[in-house]
Length: 211
Image 1 (cartoon, helix red, strand yellow):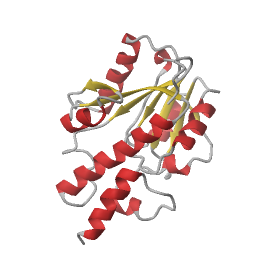
Image 2 (image 1 turned 180 degrees about the vertical axis):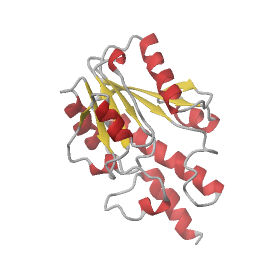
Image 3 (image 1 turned 90 degrees about the horizontal axis):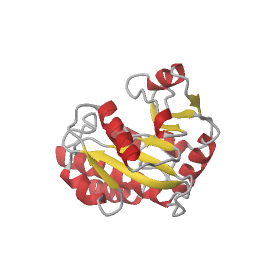
Image 4 (image 1 turned 90 degrees about the vertical axis):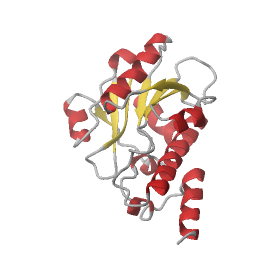
């Protein structure tokens, strides 16, 4: 993570409660919660190692999430009224601390993410007032960026890539497949030719070990 405090990104990472997130993962509630936490922690770890990132703001209502990163990130409470509200709360936190650099909103389910990929993504995004990264399907979005807190526009949800393009965000066409590989179903963890993050890999090994 950048320690210069000059021109680094502030990244907002919104995450739902571990008991409600990723309901499409058709596995036991316990395993699903473990995977959701692992995806999130691998995403955070990659962001922490990125030279482009100055500050990380996590927005969540979940006590386990708070405990897991409170010594590493700024944590903002959320009442789970929806993703747009959670993101806005993170942006408001950045305004309160007078963050003057660029901003990114990164979704928390990127277990294939790496610091190098975030370096490439965020460096490329600096060329645009606002930008977005589509997911592997081309219909969703895993990240949006803006030159400042005042410039942030986000349209996450169904067909969000199209919504972001229509809102005027530039599409980032860069080779960072691990940042496009969000996880919605368990099969997503089996079909990717990338290395899983440490935390997700550990959970998957335990899952295989228990049959």
